[in-house]
Length: 145
Ligand SMILES: Cc1cc2nc3c(=O)[nH]c(=O)nc-3n(C[C@H](O)[C@H](O)[C@H](O)COP(=O)(O)O)c2cc1C
Image 1 (cartoon, protein in one colour):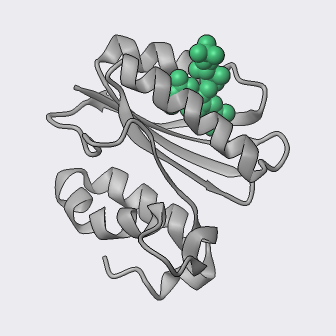
Image 2 (cartoon, rainbow, N blue to C red; image 1 turned 180 degrees about the vertical axis):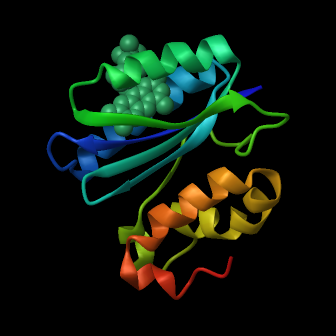
Image 3 (spheres, rainbow, N blue to C red; image 1 turned 90 degrees about the vertical axis):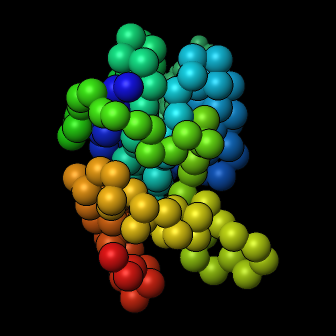
């Protein structure tokens, strides 16, 4: 099992419709390629975790890095790992703007719930996710780990 994490900057701010379209493509391809992961978006910044077989993840990353809708692509983590962090998510999605949603769990709530577990499995990746959340000040109060 292989995992990688990168950050990048949207060339232009993404609308909800653009994010939904991106997620639909990502989830379809990732399901096909047995890739799981998490995409976070806030204020024009992306952080994405991708995990799966090394060849599949690297092929996916090559397509992602070539996408002109974002730039300043920077790989933070890459390497073999014992297990997936997000086995159930072909591409989970979370952003701090979801904070206000009253009904049901948002993607963000789910990631928050997962943080202690993630921290136990891969402290480095958990710290990167936490740091991304922490850039949104409203959010800080809710971080417990
Ligand atoms: C921030 C960001 C994240 C993306 N994540 C994925 C992903 O997880 N999986 C994927 O297949 N494509 C992802 N893409 C889209 C790819 O860049 C590319 O458009 C897509 O893989 C092409 O798929 P297609 O050949 O089926 O049209 C992402 C693009 C961006 C900008």
